[in-house]
Amino acid sequence: MQKGCFWGAFGVREGLGGGYEVWLDRVTGRVCMAISAKGMAITGIDDRRYWNWVSTEESRFHTVAYLQQIWWFEVDGVVKFPLPADIYTLSFRLHLGRFSKRLGRRVSSFEHTHGWDIKPVTFELSTSDGQLASCEHYLDDTEQDYDNGNHKRGCWIDYKVGEFIVNDSEPVTEVRFSVKQIDCTHSKGGLCVDSVFIIPTDLKEHKRKGMLK
Image 1 (tube, rainbow, N blue to C red):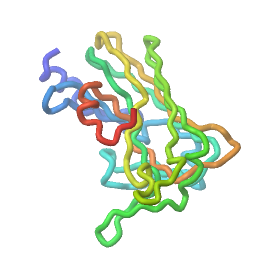
Image 2: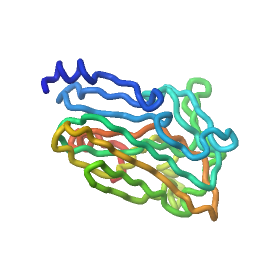
Image 3: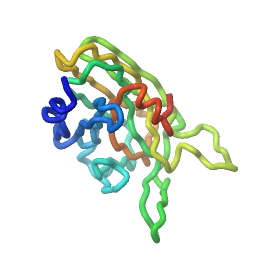
């Protein structure tokens, strides 16, 4: 399919409750996708004791989900799209702490940030043709660096979940993804969930500042 035809057919789309965008990389013309937090199923999202929606210019969707505190942390999503043949990387974009602007400066608050250094969270992806990937990460550093601070706090980090291969745009590829920490022996909180990215792997590796393998 030629670039013009693809863009005319698929350009930028809204779906999943207004929750995803598709675009062409400006240099290579290859397809990239982002799914917003509002396009995912988040356990407890409707209970303001646990979660809040926060408006921000730091998200391409202008809104992120902020977790104050919860015991069962689970975020799930699914997307069906005729992705062109390629190798893709799926990653979650997360931020420890709540951020805001004060006197023109960006500041982060870690008032609610806790529980992420006790046990790792599990990231998973699966595709409709049977491909699977999973990994675990501690979202908070288990050892403090008193000279340099905690490098996982106060910044957006792309957590790589894994890669999958699309051999043809037909049939349409369905991709399911999740991040969870469901050990209810301890609570966790102080986390922003922005989006999931699906980007051709070599493009992602080229732009991988801040990504954890």
